[in-house]
Length: 249
Figure 1 (cartoon, one colour):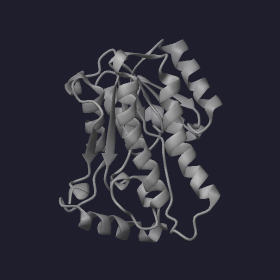
Figure 2 (spheres, rainbow, N blue to C red):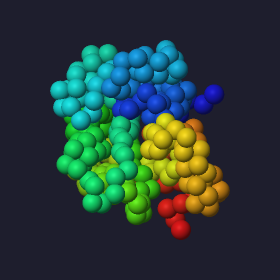
Figure 3 (cartoon, one colour):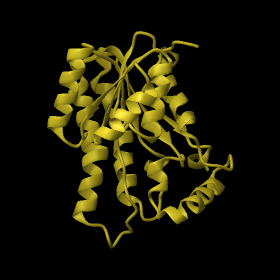
Figure 4 (cartoon, rainbow, N blue to C red):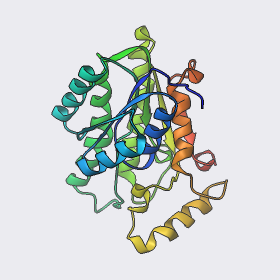
């Protein structure tokens, strides 16, 4: 077993399911001590068990600034610093233009944009110089997607955060990169449609991908390990697509 993240301390927001859970498991497997956040205590406890003894769960919603403050108070007390931050928590639902409500907009932007912003900003006192910050975006940030415009716009904002923050953080040599998955089989993706249509959705999305299938969470997690580790020591401000090529055509 390699230990690309030996002695590192990592935080993965939204680490209880899907890509976040897979990334947290991969970080732990590479030697990191991993903190994860989630909104539901039962899911958080289950995820910690899956990740193993190197994991610590902290309940919190990234759209809540007091929750974020509590997350960092606990990390400071238990670890003292951070080396890796994966700002992954996010979500969305499909609503066509003409039916978008203020609640739909606020819900998505509060988590996907405000949540990412303050997750990173509030981490700055704990992040060591030379740390790696990874923001989870999406191929939807660069492509048009029917009925998904608010979510897509939120992910485009995340992509630009990285471009700007590498300038803000250059004196500290903190790298900020973006991980942009394509269609990945996750509970979040399957939950976009009623259960009886989820398999059809996966097959349809897979047919649009040059590799002919949807991705696996483990494949995204491997890319997260690359961006978190010294293997990517001169990679900064980039967008790494893990999408089977779908955003490149």
